[in-house]
Every structure is written in structure tokens, then in C-alpha cells.
Length: 125
Image (cartoon, rainbow, N blue to C red; front, side, top):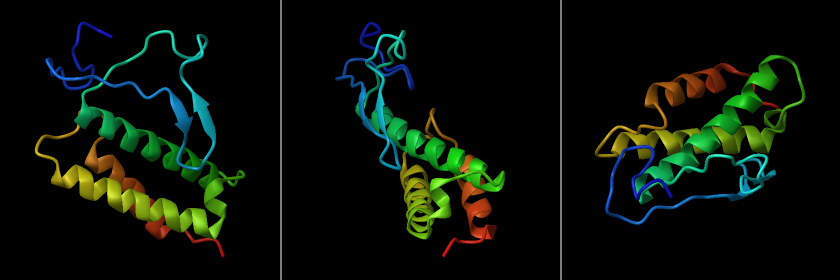
């Protein structure tokens, strides 16, 4: 823990969290506890921890969109995953828009841009 200070917004005095094990948006496992992949762990307050999860989902979706755009194999080539990703981006945008303070981890404009790109992409059947 970094002196009890959230490493995203700088808040102090509250509990801090670190998510290290789990699955990405598309269900692939990740493990940030492994020494080779987590040399400098980050700790977040509850609000920033939620935004960190939103950021992770956004990055996963954007990476798959980039693969799809480049004609590579992508989870988004599956119609149900494409639709699920579109819904998740709308959820992320709603959460960011409702927040009292702007997220230090994820810009609403980036989410909006990816939403627009997905809307103009052809949804797989």
C-alpha cells in the first residue's frame, strides 16, 4: 500500500483496494499478483476501484475493436459479444456521466468515441 493514499485520485483516510485476480471482460483470466506482472502494485479507494474496473473493460473492448478493424480474429466478431460490448460501453458512459467528479482513470470522451465506432461497424451475425 502506498501510504494509505489512492493512487488515482489522491484520497486518503479510507480503505484501499487492489484487484489482482479475475477475468477480463471477455472471460479470459488475468493475474496481476504474479511477480513478473505486478512489480509496482497500485491501490485505489472504492470509487476509483470501480472506475479501474470500468477502465479495464473499456481497454478490453477497445483492443478487440482494434483487432476487428484490422481484420484479425476478435471476440467482437461473435454477434453476442459485439452486442454485449456495446451494452457495456453504454453502461460505462452512464456511470461516468453520473459521477460527481470526473474519473481520473477513464475519459468519457474516449468511451463516447469507441461507442460511435462500434455503432458504425457492421455487427456480426
